[in-house]
Length: 534
Image (spheres, rainbow, N blue to C red):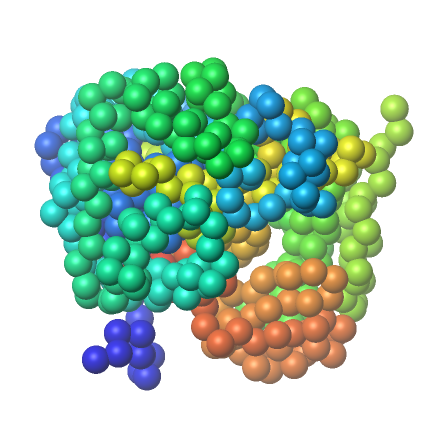
C-alpha cells in the first residue's frame, strides 16, 4: 500500500467535546495530552505532555533542543511566554567569519542557540500546572522507550531529510544524527517502529529535576561539551544563565475580535500588521480575486516591514506600538493598488515546527508552539541523549547595520508564533499554523476565514492557502481555484502552483462557546493531525 496516495477527495468534520480537547499534528501526542488530563491534569499539563511527546513522535519538526512560545488563558487573563534562547555569549560576526562563513550557516554547531523548550515545560508547569512535571512527561517517555510506528507525513519528511543529509552531512559531528534517526542505515519507513531509549532517559531526567539538569547539570555538560568539541560556541555558562520570559501579549482588533500574538522577537507582529492594513481596504468578498489580491498585498507589506525591523524589542529601530497603530496601517493600505507591487520597507518615522492547542472544562486554554527550525534543526544530536539541537541562529544577520545583527546573548528574529482569539474580553480560543515564514500568513488566513466568512474550525483550516514568497511571486495549493489564479496573474502576480500542501503550514484550532463551555476543534489535513477529546 502507498500511504501517501489519496486519489479521492475526503473531508473531516469539526470535533466537539466538553471536558477536554487537544489538537496537534500527531495522534499519539494528542492522546498523551488527554491521558494526562484524565489523570488529574489541566489544559496546561496536557500541553506539556503533548509538547514532550511531539519531540519523540515528530522529530522531523521539533526536539528537546528547540525553542517554544505559549499564550495561556487562565482565569480570564491571557499570559505570554517567550522561551526562545539567545545566541551564545562568545559568538560574534567576526568569530563566525573567522571560521570561513560569509553569512550564518544553516547547519552544524555554529547556528545553535540556547534551547528554550525544556525551560518552557518547567515554567508552565510551575506557574499553571496541577501535576508535577515528571508526571506530564510520562507518556512521552513511554513512546520513546517502547517505540511507535511512523505516520504517513512523518515518514515522508523523515525520508526526505535522510536522502538530503546522507550526502551533505559528511562531517564527524553529524554521525550521532545518523545513529539516532537512521539506525539501520536508512530512514524508518511509514508504519515501521522507531524508538529512542536515550530520549527517554533525557526526558526522565528533565522531569525529575524540573529541567535543571538540562541547564545546570549533567545534561548541560553533555550538550556544551559536544558542541565545543566541534568548535561551536554554546557553553555551560550560556545554558546556566537561561531563563524564559513572561511577556505581555500584543493584539490587533479585527472586525470586533482581538487577535493576540507574542511580541518581538517573534514574527507574530507580521500577522497583526497585515490584518490592520487589510481592514482598511474593501469589504471582503467570498472567492474573489480582488479580495485575494488585497490580502496578498497587505501581507507582502507587513512581511517586508517585519523582516526589516523585527528583532529583540529593545533593539528595534521602530516601536511595536507604531507598527500596530492605525496610522501605520492606513499609510501602508494607501500604497496598495489594483496590481501586484514590489514592496519597499516602510520609511521610519522621524524622531519558525509543531503547534498544539489544548483546553479543559475549567476554561483554561493554551496556544503552544515549539520548533528545532528547518526540520531537524542544526543536524547536531548530542550522542546517547536524543537531544536534537536547533539552528535558530541561522536567521541572524552578519551585517553590522541590520537590526537583527548577530550578537552574543541576543535573541534572533523568530518564526514560531502561537495565536489566540478573544472577543469583548472573553476567550474564543487558541489557534496556530506552523511552518517557517508561512506562519503569519497562515494566521492571517485562518483569522479572515473565521471572522469574515464564519467558517467552522475545520473548514477554516481546510481552505486552499496561498503563500507570498518574494517580490510578485505567490505560491498556491494544488486545489486553489484555477480561475482565481488566472485573475491574480492578470493583476500582475507571478502564480506558482505547488504539487502538494506541504509548504503551506499545519494548523490547529480550538474554539470555546462562552455560554455552554462546549469546545469545537479542527486539525490539519496537510499532516497527520488529530483532535483528541474527553
